[in-house]
Amino acid sequence: MATTRNIKNWLSRPISIAPLITLRVVIGALLVFSTARFWALGWIDDHYVRPMFHFKYFGFEWVEPLSATGMYVVHALLLISSLCVMLGLFYRLAAVAQFLLFTYTELIDLTYYLNHYYFVSIVCGLLIFVPANRAYSLDVLRKPAIFQKQIPRWTIFIFQLQLGIVYFYAGLWKINHDWLANALPLKIWVPANDQLPLVGWLFQQKITPYLFSWAGMLYDVTIVFWLAWSRTRPWAYLTVIVFHTLTGLMFQIGVFPLVMLGATLIFFSEKWHERVWNWVSATFTKPSRFRKRDSNVSVNPPVERTDPYRMTNVEHTESGSRIRNSSFAIHHSPLIILFFAFQILFPWRYLLYPGNVFWTEEGYRFSWRVMLMEKAGTATFFVKDAKTGREGEVVNSEFLNPHQEKQMAMQPDMILQFAHFLKKHYEQRGVSDPAVRAEVYVTLNARPSRLLIAPNIDLTKLRDGWSHKTWLTQSMPE
Image (cartoon, rainbow, N blue to C red; front, side, top):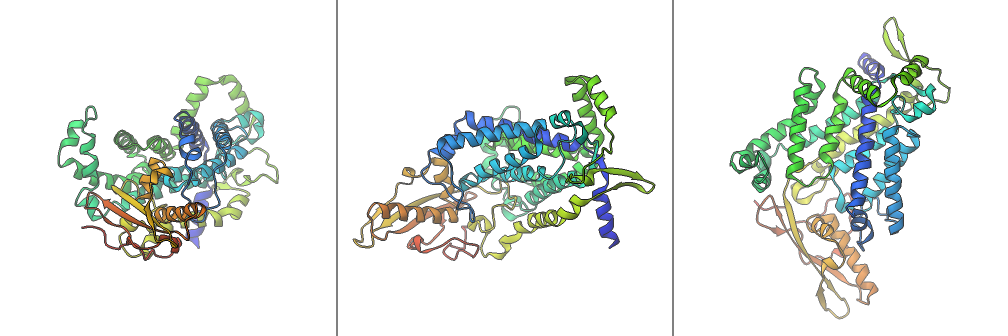
């Protein structure tokens, strides 16, 4: 019990709000940039408007894209809400809108799933529950009474913990034979980037993929600990810069390197963040105005009874800093514990399934397996008319864009979804009780391609679910 009490006290201790302000601004700014970039590159049309079929997340089959105009409005609102989060304007409403809009766009089509989109969605969701607008925000200019210099430690710790889970699992899953003993798939990816300036010659060396494999594993497993220790933090962050810059140059992973470069700043000390914001305040604002406002607002401002952040009202006692009125923590701590229990346990669900997780992908998503394999497939579908017995080959590109087709061809649940779509499509065109089978050849980490599923199974008779997919071939190529 003493341990539980000590943990609660530690999580409740007041610390500077500055790290949380940095995170709010970084995430808001990145989503503004990402959404504007997404729009400018024409990806709203490519991803949501043009495809005649979207692959669904299990349990979220009800999520549908809006009309073309509707999808542009969604992205416009996402851009505005992210800008408001960055500036701290109408923060709570903006944070909720940012989370819902971003998550909605990601739920529309499973083929666009990426670990960093999942991570951003989680961070946006957590931002709803923390008082990240109580300093250096337009909300403080509107309502000076909400200003706070200090917040409970848990409001920072939840983001550090989430980042720790991401990095640690990303490293833990790298401890496998292919990654460490065979340097796969880096043995494929590294030589393909030997044209990079300055470091290209290094990528031509045979030993480089092995060095990168081991260094990548050690980096992911330990980086959070080095970032958390003040003595090693500067050097650790230098490796964060080098690591994510390299991966950004080598792979088409969008804004992911910027997300991690910005998010890991949450590990820096309160004083470091305060120096940053003091510099920002002195450089871009009228210092006299802010100093005056600071001098008029107490660290412990009067708080209304209905304020959901009453626990952030701190006082200093003889035994040290304590949190008073911890109603938020009391009411929401079970939810927070449940969320992080899910984050820690859910990636292990792959142990419940037979076969290699890289081959079957049962339990692969939402487990922070990042860039672990080179996998590709070719899927040829055949539709058979039950009445006439005639069978025809499907041209996938008539229904899917290149990205959808590429992702579908190696992931079993998407193959199943596409087969059911084909059944409905051809039924509407007069084919009698169409049966759909597929010849799917998949190659994993440069191994010879092999059938992923038995080619004579009528896929329309199968249903997706949490249970094991017995229709998959269980042995991947050696």
